[in-house]
Amino acid sequence: MIEKYGAESVAILTGELLDYSDRLMRAELSKMPAGVFEAEDCLDDDGVGADPLRIAVSVRFEPELGRR
Image (cartoon, rainbow, N blue to C red; front, side, top):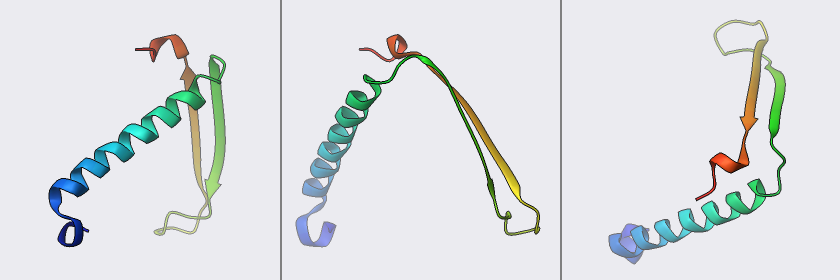
């Protein structure tokens, strides 16, 4: 892409894409209620052993902390 469009154009468009994705993410997050969200799943294995690998996450979402 740099060879075709030039480094400056690619850098500008990359910045615009990041700004756009930031706006979309903030719009979706503004719709979410505050709270704790949890999820758990398993991978079949980790590529080294044959046992399932548990993955668990807990996220506390506080919308007021993310406002600019």
